[in-house]
Image 1: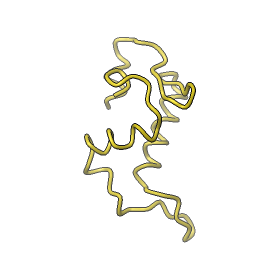
Image 2: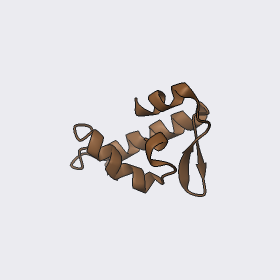
Image 3: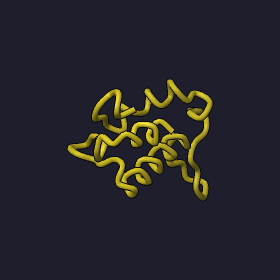
Image 4: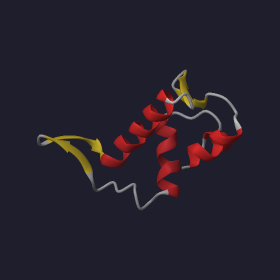
Length: 81
């Protein structure tokens, strides 16, 4: 997605992800731990994916926006899942 859209904040990514994965982005399902609500479950999954991609050196957070670490051939397909 970042290869097409360019640098995006997490907030800007959410509607784009919802558009391509409506089956996974159910706003009726909250992340609940020990009875405490922590927001939408799918948004936590997005955050986990971002952190994994960052740990693997595929994306970085710069000035509040996610950017591709490099423009490698295989990275575009890895980010599209």
